Image (tube, rainbow over all chains, first blue to last red; front, side, top):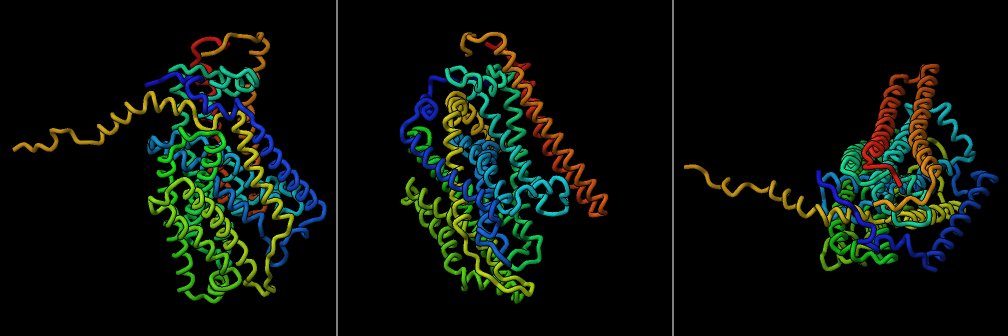
Length: 448
Length: 88
């Protein structure tokens, strides 16, 4: 096995976020912390006054919190799944991207996983899941799969971080004990590299089915009911595709923000964005195909309740949001990512923000309209989110940004050792791999 | 690669203890998950409520957690055994 010794002095730009703290950083942290604190205040107010402070009522008992839960868990697919797939396929352009993707997963899973608790009027009753949970309920499948995915993703983030933590341990004066503890005695010996590589290889295989199962199971909390607009056999893969789609968009926004903030232009080059943009465009086409199938089969079947739900979304109350979703998830990515001329970093940023907006709308359009039009003889209702729900949504977004900044202050957001390994070993390995793909020169000469 | 030692033996022991605690915590977490799964299967049995489904789901969940804990333990002991010399 080939090994090398990463250097803490070769790529100072990658330690910039740890070494230098600017006024801009403090201001950003202050603003984000203020938003989070306001959200905490609004949540405490909700716990004291009850769910009456939200826009939820009969028959719409799931609103922003469940929409955001599905949205955030979807974004978590950015990381581990993309990182694992790029590692498995040995895509060399993955090196500056994987760390950010893995961090997004861990943070967003933690934030998304809290949302069902926000949706409980009495949060202490979450203990009932552990004491009296029923494992045949998709809600409990969600709890188990999301917690398993969180555990697997955190380990998958931590393992490739170990050599970088050891670099920090050896170069830092502050928090040395912290890095020393987390480095687990890493010295970069051949035996240690072998152990770490083997563990990363196992984890990158394990996280793929776990990640796919998570969003499939999230779709089941809708699809396993007999509600119109929810009861669909394609909801599992439809949700997985949407999750990867929104995940890549979130990864782009994060990459562009950190590239600009920490001057990482030399590491996150245009080629990285263009390669990943092709994947985003492919996911856009796949999402459009699934949406078309989902709506066409329901419409063609003509079942009265199903038709009512579809028309309510496409031509009724939700029509502006529905068509905005189609524009954001299909037309904008098609134009901005489909033509080389527009596939620039600003173009990719606009397309990614569009996709995030579109995918959030998609979650809203799945969750709320069905509840507004119940099959049972209940009066229909219109859901309008309250200030509490909007504040908690803003708080969740701010918490995500704050957590990412916190991570960047402690650890390199681009994997130092993987970049250096790429320079030292990957070129030779690539040549050998390409050689192994090609037929020998003598292979074309058939013996007469 | 490592800097010269600037800390006493107590520092090294403290760090080793923290590291050991991190892996023990992982197994305690796994123990908590298994206890939870056993409890919900027991509830399902006492209510006569889809026992086989509960057992099936819990077996899959416990297997995933066990695999994650096992990989982490393998790395922990692998890195300790693979050290070239005493830590500074």
